Length: 151
Image (cartoon, rainbow, N blue to C red; front, side, top):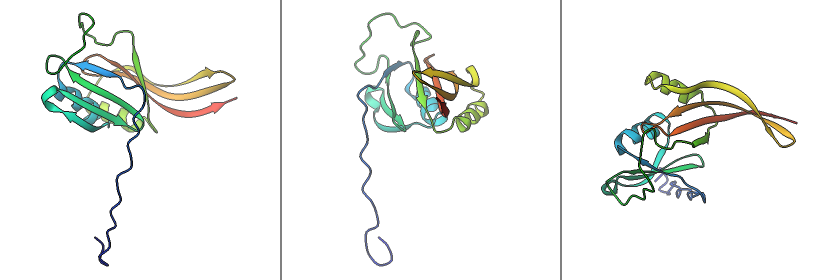
């Protein structure tokens, strides 16, 4: 309430849920949350601790974490580290500099150092600043930010 007695609170904005959300099988939910939330700046939208599950987002990037052996797991084959071989998740951020600083302060190794790269995108070229890092289970994540476009 304000001094005049009127309610100045606003109702929360509705959450956008994308049609594709990867669910990563992980070994330790607490370690994964330290990485994804503590270092990478994701927020927990909801969780089910008894099932070893958390639903995360940053901007419009969403992902789910599910601890192996705690809840109901769908495992099509043997899980061997690093998990997620053959896939990398690109996550766009407004600016990657702050995340790079947090990772360096935590002495978290990069899989690929930061670079600026221009990609052909049909009739144009898109410039991105990007780097790659692995999460605690070995999933490869490419954090990127747009630096421009050329025709």
